[in-house]
Length: 442
Image (cartoon, rainbow, N blue to C red; front, side, top):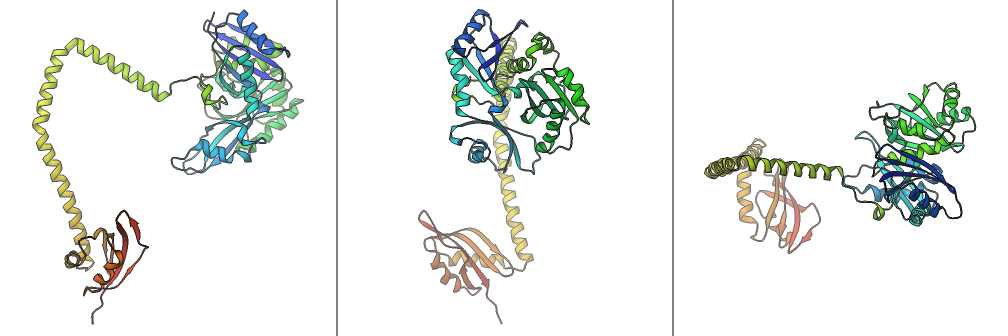
């Protein structure tokens, strides 16, 4: 049995299958047995000796809703939940039976968050899963087939506006790309090149383009269509710049089914965890994230370096660490003393700055502080104290906030004492905010 990357493009009762092995071998076949497609698929894979790995499934573009939507940039917000609440405005089927996934699109920090959402009806996703279960296989991913096409492109692509028109089964899938980044997609029925050119021009407003830098045409009859479509468009029309590693596999596909075969090949070449995956989380294979891989690599490298150093110079390292530890212990009291002095100096500077500011504003802060200390009861304490030319504002907690008003009214320095905010209960205390004016003297 040979391990292989298997991509299956499903449309109606027909499945186009491409399997790529690690030895550079490509197998292509079509399953169009309506009576028992699961058994037919299992028999084909078994006869070719492919091991029972996960299969990447691609749906026809017409079975899914693909739309870029805008969301507010809420700090720490759950984007998936926000999309779920807003989904009923964008899909023609009940949201509770909808399977969807999303990926964030590039946008400026001051703009709304833009996300590309792919949604499909639940039974649309369950149908290929049942097919694979009958063939005794498990799904690695369920995506829209044409969204896997960028996996065949060269990685060194500049950022430019491109429309990729891929023809298969009498229709054309339009991918709107910024470099290798998918912005959105459409499926159009193009009977002739003029229709396809018209649909390409109609796609520009969807992504707010005035035009495209380039148009790529691939799939069934691509060579003849490129010339005809190029005559109707201002942008240059060419074939997609496929990666060098993908060219031998593309050449091995049959010419009479190049469109569907290229979609199945793209599914096989896609990453193990593709974006916009409609497969339920519970059915997905566990794959470590990039952060987990980096952490594991760093741990492994650190362990190897530590082992090498330990084997080479363990005695010298221990002696050196002993001297360093002794020096740290010797300097630790001095360091703590310096930190304490710095903190005390910073605190005194803040107090001095506050007093100097109050003095500059001709507010006698110290006498007022002394009087408040004598006036306020023992059960009251302040959280904030503000003095200015108009009066004083106190914020804090007390056993009885209303009892503070007559105490402050009795002060020879204050008048018109009032609560500026409702009193709230905090545990056993009352939270208050008081404002008083300076008492005017003749």
